[in-house]
Amino acid sequence: MAALSFWIPALALSVLVVGLVVLGLVRGARLRDSEPGEKRELRIYADQLKEIERDRARGVVTEDEAERLRAETARRLLDADRKAQSALRDSPSGMRWLALGLAVAVPVGAFALYWHEGAPDYPDMPLSARYAEAESMRAARPSQDRLEQVWRDSDEYVAPPEPEPRYADLMQQLRAALSERPQDARGFRLLATNEANLGDHAAAAQAWVRVIEIEGEDAPVEDLVQLAENMILATGGVVSPQAEVVLDRILRRDARNGTGRYYLGLMFAQTGRPDLTFRLWRGLLEDSNADDPWVPAIRRTIEELADIAGVRYTLPPESATGARGPSAADMAAAADMTPEERQAMIGNMVEGLASRLANQGGTPEEWAQLINALSTLGQTDRARGIFAEARMVFADQPEALALIEAAGRQQGFVE
Image 1 (cartoon, helix red, strand yellow):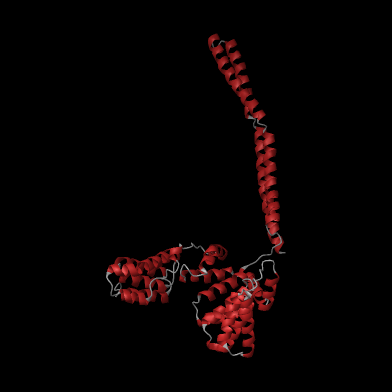
Image 2 (cartoon, rainbow, N blue to C red):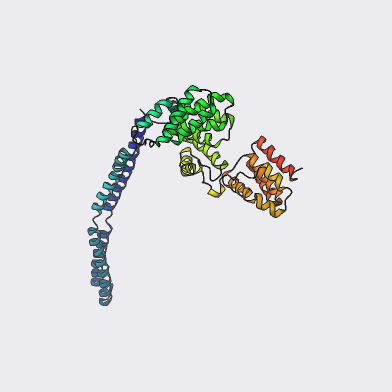
């Protein structure tokens, strides 16, 4: 049924276009046949020659005048004959057949191209259906163990090299010792690190699981990050349901954790929600420093994600990465400096923040931060202009506008 909803309108539109072209050609042919211009000219000039002879015979024109008129009319008659011969060589009927052939060939070619390159049987996919399919895809993901097995069986998997005999013996001794000391968190941490060094990320993940079990609910976020990374590496980069649970635990403890945000975005990309990936990675890219490990991967793909998400987005220059503006501590430290020292300390951060807000927009907190930063730097007129712009941006958002107004009052821009 979904296929018919595409093919019937497409076929009707093609028939309509071809019909209009054919109608135009037929009407043009009738018009041309009913009023053959070149033949009519020849007939008129021939009649004029006869009329000149009659006028000469009746004495209406002199012999010299009749000769001049005959010569002029004969010249025009020859020109009209040449035009008629040229029109005949142009073969208008052949051109009509060529136009008709093209009118038919274009829709036929379009259908053939779509059949080969498109998806003729693909059903309609409104957003609600896409989101439902993504949820089903997310729920149907294989388990961590299954994904690890699939990765090891794939052609892309490269088994880690055999360790040196001495190193292998030490690892065997460590494993044996830990089997007798199951509560030795330090020992399992050492085991996890060395298993990862050997390239066995599945074994490393198992060791980190044991470390976190021993540490309990207060396990450091860094240990959870290590666990999540090793779980994902053990599956060849696929985020399993079990790894997602670990990521959720990381982000509940540290909502701005870069590794957790990156891998959660990756999970959404793998389960049919690239729009959510874009939202997560856009904020992460803006929060990150240029040397953070996830930045190159995000920069390579975020523009494509923006297109899929239907968002107009311009990738900021690498120098603008992490340009969220100075922190409160930065501003406090800058308060006692000279204008030159303040400019050297926070000028670049302020310019990066101003550029991003101008090109991409931002939160009301960031606009207020920029207003305060520019005022601290002594750029009062510019801060006042940013304040006026922010009031227009958030004019229809009362809570955000209240925050902007508070920043303006703090700087003396409003009473």
